[in-house]
Image (cartoon, rainbow, N blue to C red; front, side, top):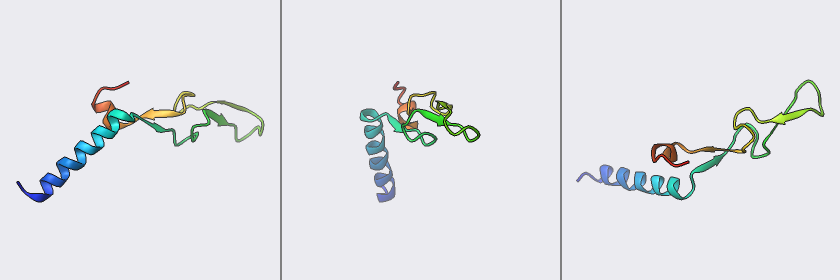
Length: 68
């Protein structure tokens, strides 16, 4: 086998193993605060729209592995 193919397969195996044990990543919009702050009214806030107030998203590899 070609060395580049072996390295690619090993990297994919490590990535999917990581996704199996750690399926979530933090929400980039709220940075795990689970809140979305208003730009107009300084004290107003609500649930983050991007993650629906969970603070995290499921990773692509975990989605491919069909984990929830």
